[in-house]
Amino acid sequence: MPLASPKAAWKGSELAQDSTWIQHFTGDDLAELDAALAGVRARGLADEALTAADFPLPTFAAKLAAILHEIREGRGFVVLRGLPVARYGDADVGTIFYGMGTHLGDSLRQNPRGDLLGHVHDQGRAYGGKDVRGYETNAFLPFHTDGCEIVGLLCLRVAKAGGRSSLSSALTVHAEIAARDPEALAPLYRGYHYVRREAALTEAPVSPNRVPVFGAKDGVVSCRIVGNQIRAAAKHFGVALADDELRALDLFTELSGAAGIRLDMDLQVGDIQLCNNYTVLHSRTEYEDFPEPERKRHMLRLWLAMREPWPLAPGFPRQLGYGVNQPTELHLGDEVTRLTSLALR
Image 1: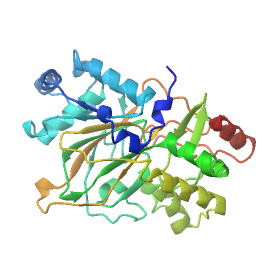
Image 2: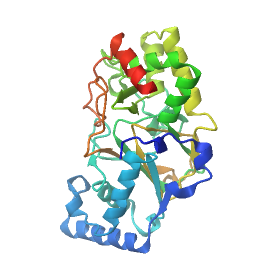
Image 3: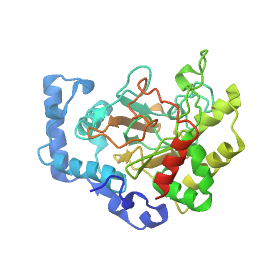
């Protein structure tokens, strides 16, 4: 079956009436997870040392393989519902999540500390700061992609108010741009300069090369974007955006968040959201926390690499976590014309 099938070009208005993207843990699934967790604890293994062999799931592994198939070759995302997190401590939930991830891909580092299991919660930092990453705040996060190939979120605790998760199909956004303003695709394939968040206070705060938003190979369109880092490069460091670049970026932002295109969901405690980072964009609304520290909104995050590589165009490198990618510049001219033409077929 070809990758990024037409099923991946979905609209939220359609999926809101179709709950098949939600799958539920069964009693047998949970029993296998409990047994695997007990085995890890008995052997004293650290999460980052785990392999799929260390976290055996005799029958649940087949369900995870089907989920991976849906992520790569179907609509691009799945929500698993019903992990009883109250049964465990936070550390055990993290081990279960990480152990499941070993059956889906290879773990990637998410920050300069090298964390393989991320913690998404408000750290009291001000969104928009040059060196601040969105997951450290409680702010609204526009639609974007992460630095990985599969991104997973597990809901440990919900906010007092807000924090709604939303997804959009990057392929639907691409198709809408092609229909409404096809000339806007060229700057998106050419790409933009980014603020390098962890280097924002150094002498080299902006990516030296353009990072393409869209790429296409063998008819498969892939997406990569963090719009706020593009705009921050222009605002704080004088990397001017041409009129066509700004128009294309504004149109992408408008369409990815459009009511008929995006799919909104309130992740429940114990939900696990898994997305293909090349075909699915994600967003989050602003949220308000409970005052008690133990009740504050908290998500666990996995960044995974696909073991079967995704087809990517030249100049559109794999997303392999923090400190790995050095994107090469996608130059003007024939290459942009060729890629844009291919993507519109």
